[in-house]
Length: 398
Image 1: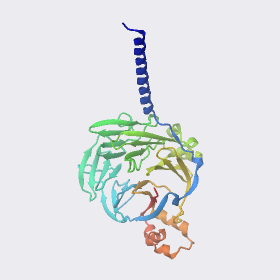
Image 2: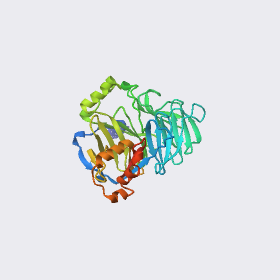
Image 3: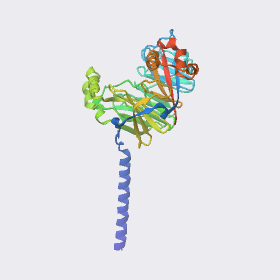
Image 4: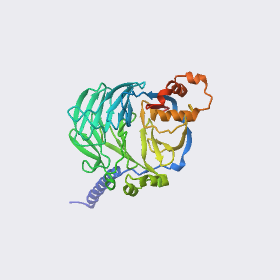
């Protein structure tokens, strides 16, 4: 016979069980909710000095031989002892040594086995390079002498890729390729969609130069989306870890205007008139921060430091070079070996140097100092007038 105490005890156990399941369900739902947009107050910026964040500047001439055509420079990358640059027009990859001297070229040669004709992206490792030809649906593995070591057939035509031991990530932009996904992972023959395209902006794509970036500090992979203010973060197993979405307030470029103007002239005029942010120019992982560069159309680039815990944001309106006095646009594009990397056309650099230092007295000791910008300029003065490139390394204090 059941007593009232038994009945109450049983009911109490049921209530506790229901509460536990409900709380578990709610916690699961909460973990799946997208994070709130991170507001960036671009009007709160300040001036800063390079010496606040960096401890050394180094200038390097990328000496492009006259015999090797480099028509449309695209993606730069670096290893410990090599520099790589792709040609968007000719679909080649040029390889230089750490001193900027040309060493080799990996050429687009055709459509046959072990060949590629169109290069969307590339990725370097210690002793080899992967080249993506989306139109031929393949990834080729080369050594640095240009010999093919492997050919990987793929199912898609992506714009960017990232490959490691776990599998491959592909980025399609806003072009439908697999179940309306913008990003997918392929692991052990399984395809998983990780981010849907913006269907209202279907077909609107910007050329994502740097694509996926590896964060050596947190050992994850980052991808900024160029038709939104989002950054996706993946772990080393290529699972999506989190999404960061940024909000620039009145400087946001509304999606309805993106769709209305698409890629026409009216788009630029609208952006200029309202000083809006069309896209995040670069998003670079540092040791304890992310560095973001944005351009309000018609205004100088702004530098934004974001603590990786997302609880501290600092906007820099103007970065003043108090280290060697060379004032120019501070717009690094990637980080390598503790350096933020900027790239300038050599003629642009030549003209900016003259604007900064013409008519000024330069200490002869600085002209003799191999680490000085003045030594660099005088050493390479004639070549700086030609079609070469200057790499500026900003050594991070972190």
